[in-house]
Length: 435
Length: 127
Image (cartoon, rainbow over all chains, first blue to last red; front, top):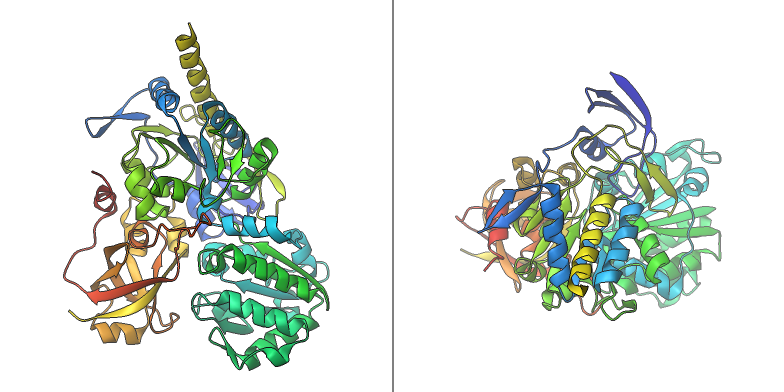
């Protein structure tokens, strides 16, 4: 038995880097410290895809890595406008190869931000972001707001490591010296911990941001008695707490990106944060989901100039979420093949998009079988990043961290190498045609 | 069977997260193929825990199990993010790239139909 320390979690955007595990016979047998229940489940492992496979007469038939990679290359080479989607549960090195492949074959490259914090990215491009690192919040913040976000279930270590419960340099008393406001449409597990729980009517977040922003700007007289289901007295209480805070922080989640005004909700959230600057330090951050959803956006920006939903079929990068985003592309039937890597649209895309995904040739690269496997014509199992292979990722606050390899695999291949090998085969096919 | 009009939202849960890499298991099925609603909505529908309900929207219909969670206001139901919820949410992104995963008008009614296992649910998209 070997104890491995400083393991970096490859599950959610918290990317906890203080995990201690026990490894025996090349297997993680115990998670001793650091991980939440979700991270622990990932580290202890699940049933894997046993072999590469190609679908023949409706059934997946096991084959070699070489055969599956060749078949994947053929699909992409024949395609006129493939969608290369996913990229958030893998490392930046694989993402870099993916964007290069998409450029070479004239595809559309998109990551899970498309169905997650895409609207936040649009809002940040629109009005900027008064942001900071999670370390700043841990050490300084005295008022934490979670808006449309339920970290107690979705980012279980977030409050303990970085925000409300954490103890830092100027926050040595932990939650005793802090206040927590939760804004949500339902009384979640996180809401039950709050000093103030603001229950908003579903879809009315924009109006509630506007009301608080108006109060912070000193115009409370124009705010009606009730906004978005919230009584004016409670809105005044929130505004007053915000005015008194020395360092305030708004974390926001899918509760605001998935609903109503989408990116306009986030623009308003950012401007509300700015209004807080009249009184103290205020910052805001999206609660990014997958451990490297942020990293793909970084890599894609370096390589194409744009963070996600980038169409490279024109010979130059074209960015227009709503047109080039995966859901729209699929729902319109506007791509003729798909390569899905490190994500699961089968489980997480609306039916309107899945009806087309089920029709077109689809390649899946993933360590685990999932609903997407049901549509896949080629399945290529991958090594698990952060357990069987190392690589760079970006935490939700854009801080880069390196995932460690903690066990060996003599069979599974890392995503980076799979994508490189597919690309090499595409080049070989092109070379043959040129002869 | 008499139903009730509700607003549907979706989202993560801890158990859904624990089974992200094992979505073909019963644990995932039990956690995700369900609809949380306020006790008074359950009473209105005449359903108890684990009774099946049919959730119908303009985009489709899906059968899931009912579960009481009074954290949801009356008239708003929650289905954990996953294949069952996505069978009834809207693919329309209103030109913004983001589907409507939350805030979908829906009708919930008691049903004798069974919940489709995940592979069968995926098959409904084929052909």
